[in-house]
Length: 106
Picture 1 (cartoon, rainbow, N blue to C red):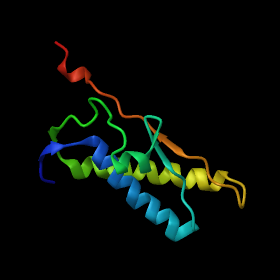
Picture 2 (picture 1 turned 135 degrees about the horizontal axis):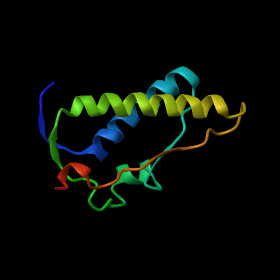
Picture 3 (picture 1 turned 30 degrees about the vertical axis):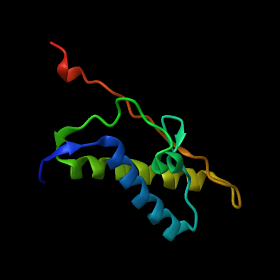
Picture 4 (picture 1 turned 180 degrees about the vertical axis):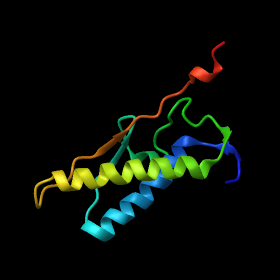
């Protein structure tokens, strides 16, 4: 893949969620909601909340990150749907985005 010099993990996460949510809606007719750091994804997408330090950009092959996020979210969404009783709303899926890395320590 190509290196994106401005990879933003929160944006990649939201894009992967949108695709996994669509897949669940198509297959099961319903999909759980996503909570990002305790904030509903719909509010996050609307720009109602800032996630301090989360949108730090860095060079990375963003399609790799997308595939990891998509597979993890897809599995979590399907598990939530299968766990819910018929007619019951599936529990939301929670994602935590953190800042910092151990790669920068000396």
